[in-house]
Image (cartoon, rainbow, N blue to C red; front, side):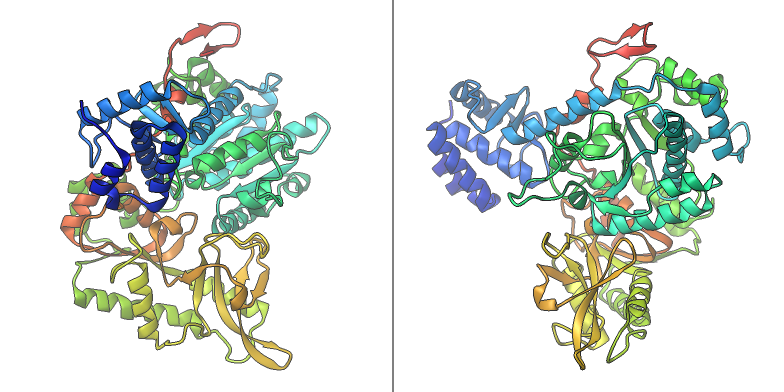
Length: 620
């Protein structure tokens, strides 16, 4: 039997761990007086820092062999003896920090509970007429209207996920769902309280914009349009921080709403999802929108992917198919051929996938490339690379091509900078500057190095002729929440001259979700960085007419097919790619795998006994 000591382990492998991991391990050693538990604590903390909710000892580890892990875990379990005061929880092959185990269990229980809540008083004939009015037949009878299916599922449930790639119509679907729910509430004699939210300020702005546009296109009565809100907030603003740093709205003080729509749900980490579900009133309906195939959240968890069981194709139960048929008139046989899963977990009846893109044509290179990335298909990628697509530009990674990209980008960015007045800029000018700036963005896989965010930003400032830290036209991204200033991680501002008390001074202009401009002194801003280039992670929730995607020279753990897919799908009309062919192949074969038990908790079916009284499978 190997003798494990924390100090000796740190002497040998300490360089592989963060300081916070080491301090936590030492704390656990003081608490337990057991080196095995302390080393396990070190490994769990390290995994959390990598985005994993838990430490799964069934997976290969970079330092310890399978037998060493098994022995260490066995000894640690013996020392722990399920001490509820100790900050680790052992569950099968997974070891959690107690707090994250609580988050995961709560999310599972909250979703399961909401999946059991159905609207029992559905007026099927009335709903069928309304749904058919909202979705006039545009397709051939051989093609299912997936938006229509999603609305028929969500109208009856307290919890629904609507997942789809770019251009599949998630906003169009949800705006029609809201119109339908407003009519349903009207029958009950009141108007529902509806809130819209997204994880970041940029995503909230995009949701505000897209909801506003979709609302005006909606063919419904004015009183229905009036009941649909146009402004979305961030989740942090929705839940509100109190003076203690906790959220004001929580399980004891739920949100005042009937319907909550949350966009870009793939960006929500496990703790935030737990706090969001805790703050929902019991009667409230939650609709999550997002793309299950995108990158997961920056912090721990891959919540949307776990909820959707990403990578596995699911369908609906027989009773759910019959109800969809009643509400949509889509033939039952056609539904059974496409989306039937007669036995399975209850959550399958609450996850809808939009499969048809309305943004890209059949000849779109961006769409074809996104599909190849999502499937990890190296051969198809090569075919696209050799093809002739007007919306794609491929550059092999050479110093010459890097310099060409910098010069082309400087020319594109000069378009917004030419709009800036040298002495004073109005709110209208600031809005226009933001609009033009957001047409183009460079996306990097990594932060550091010549091909990372830092190197590209520095090269662009040099190409544009800027040497000062603060200058007119400098775009900045907030890196740290500041609740006092109402600024949040990911918010983007542009530094502009402003006439104040007869003197021209630089101010950072931030565009709010309601299109209002806020002017802030640069010295007051929290941590921030220049943002001609940004990481693919930070770009989630944003879209640009033209994107340039830059990969590093050598393989890195961050390079996955999900990162590639996310970067590609930020481009609406044109994509430029700077990368080596061999690195693309490596990236396509590499997949995000975050350790978590949420997927198993939601999708594992122990007893799927059909209940004729409810027409559902009972899992409880």
